[in-house]
Structures are given as C-alpha cells and as structure tokens.
Image (cartoon, rainbow over all chains, first blue to last red; front, side, top):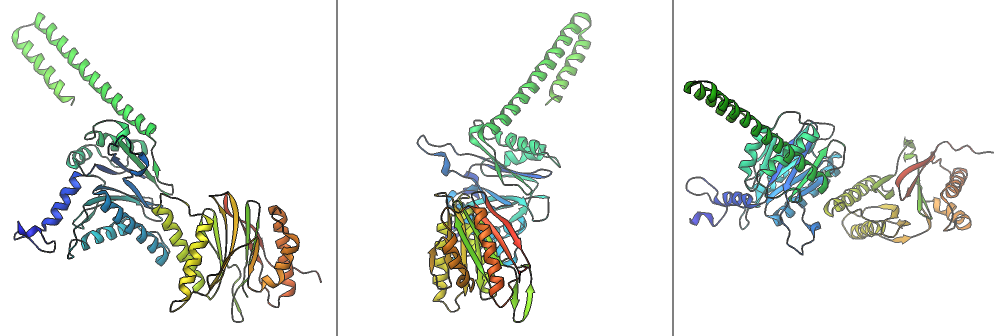
Length: 280
Length: 203
C-alpha cells in the first residue's frame, strides 16, 4: 500500500501503481471513439450533460492540433488542456524546423513521450488522460489513428474507444468495423458504437470528420440527429421484421398442430425457435 | 539593395518587393519572394541581414499559426500581429545576437474592417502609415506618394502609381532591382496582382 505514494517506485510485483490509478481516472471520463474509414477519420465523443446555466461553447473534447491532426481525450479535462497545448506547440515547432507538417505517428509519439516523462519524475503525477489522435500524414491519403495512455504507451488502431464503458464500445467496434468504410458508414458506426453506452440521443454526441486536404468538420446537431434517427429507424425495421418472422412461424406451427401429429408439431416449433434466435 | 514598398488605401494594402536577390556581384535568384503570409489577412515583407530575415519571418509565421490553434482558430488581427512582431524585435535588440530585420506588415484588420500598413525596423520601431518603403527606395518614392496618394485612392490607381515608382527606381538607382512582385491584401485575403520584370526605359 505504501508503494503507491511516490510515483517513481515500483511495487513488489513490478507495477507502477500511480500509472494504473491514472488508467482508472481515464475510465471515469466520458467515452470517446475513433474510427478509420477508407479515406476519412472519425472522432466522436459523449458530450457531458451541461448544467442549466452553463454555456455550451466552453466544452470541447475534440481538439485540433494542426490543420491535419485532431485529438480526442478521455479523463481529466485540465490535464488534457496542458497536454494538447504542448502538442500544438510541437506541431508548429516541427513545421518551423523541418518545414513539414508532423506525421500522425510523430505527434502521437511526442504526446506519449510527454506522458511517459511524467511517470518517471519525482514530485509529479501522471496525466490522467488517454488520447485518440487521428489524421493524415503529409502527401499521404491513408487515414491514421493512434491511442496514447497514461503509461506513455502509444499504439496504432483501426478503431478504438477510450473512457467510460470503453470495453463495451470496443467490442461493438470489433464486431462491426470493416475495411474501407465510406464517410457516411463510418459516421454511422461511430454513432452506433456510442449509442451503446450513451444515455440519450444526438444532443450528447459530438462527431468530427477528418478528410484529406479538408478542414476538420464538426457535424452540426441536426446532422447527428439525422444519423441517430436513421439508426433508430433501421433498428425498428429490424425489430418489425423479427416480429413478423416470429408471427409467421407461430402461425405455421399452429396450422401444423391442427393438421398433423404431436411429433410434427414439435418439429415445426423447434424449427421456428431456431429461426427466431438465428435472426439476432 | 533590397526594396520593400507598401501603400494603403480604402479596404486594401498593396505590398511590393523587388525580385532580385544579390550576393556580392552575383544575382543569386531572379524571382525572390521577400514575403510570408502570416494568416488569411496578413502579409509581412522582410529585408535585412541574410539568414536573419527568413529565420525571423518563419518564426513569426509559426507563432501566429500557434495562436490560432490555441484560441479556437481565432485569426490574430493586424494590429496585434504588428505589436507581437515589434515586441519580439525590441527584445531581440538587447540580446546576444539581435535580428537585423526590417519589415513591412500589411493587413486587413478584421476587428474593425480597415486596412493597415505598419513599418517596423530592427530596433523595434513601429509606425502605422499610409505608405512606406524600406531601404533606399524611400528616398525616391515617399515624395511621389506624398504627391499622389490619398486615403481614398482606389486600388487600380495605386497599382498604376506603384508601377510608375518601379520605373523611377529602375531609372535612378545604380543597380538593377530585377523587377517587382506586387501583392494585395484585402477582405478576401492575400493575392498577387502584378509581376513586373525587365522594366524597359524609354531613353
């Protein structure tokens, strides 16, 4: 227990407890999702519910580091502000020294490097945030997505989620992500993934679309509302189809009952029930 | 013998620089652009110590971009840009190696919808002026602008006046300047309006 007081000390079983507690702070933050499409990157996050008198403008969870890179975070907002500012300075500094914008890997490595430094210093605590950094490298149209963690680890992803219930969202993404998603499909997947864990609808979801050689585009509330509605309609249509199938199966089984013997009935109802579960 | 020229009129600033870049007795480059676009509505022309000029100009460009990034893409307005630049030069003056750079900053100030032209030298002297030049050109051109430029002069007339100025410089300065590139800054941003090379003089 005393091993978690000073940061730069290992616990007896080789863990840095402060770093792990940092991960816990991340898990308390609102969810953020990042998805790589065929030629777009999507960052979406849960917008924290505002208090009555709070003005919307100040709450920004998706930050733009440069024309071609954006960052979404989960965890302690104040820590994020500091880290984002350092990243912005580095992005301009890189442009100044090598006359080239940063690659996504470079800036992710830089952010992760800063986070690592704070796990190996005296008198400081790690940043309580994980980040999703995405964008396009100069002269390359492949979308890139990286995640960094309080430990200072950075890794490349095709799609990922951080923050509250990130495991649920990541599993949803694992089931539904495919290669070369179009812009609309990628947006839909991001919103669908968030809707797994976000309570209410479009007002609480912020979506940002990154495309090559275009300004970062934050979708307006109405546009997100449309996607949410589309998802809801599709879900309803699927539920209706399911109900129709079950009704048809029941109708068949009841007609079978009147016409044939007990074993035939058992056969058809078993068939109906397997068909029912298969549509999941 | 680098030449920077600027004139300001209603809603626009015309900024011009000569095209030759000379080292000793060699013309290094006949199409040298002595400017940097700082943001959508601000352009900075530089002259002075080779090396210091580009270094300083790019440093200013990077910091203006950083300001926008940090402040939700707010574009730094012309007056603020000039103040920042002046402060940097004033600080540099009392450092181990001061930047020897003289500048003209022209911009369309989006906070009050007016065009502004600033003359700034390496000592950190700043003046907001209706027309100006850096270098020997000022000896020839300021009197011309005094006579013909007014606060109401439209852009096309100002451009014609500038072209007369280029001719005058070509006629009276002992070294050929190699022509001029003229840029206009107005509410729509920065654009090149003229490239004049090889000014022919009627004998």
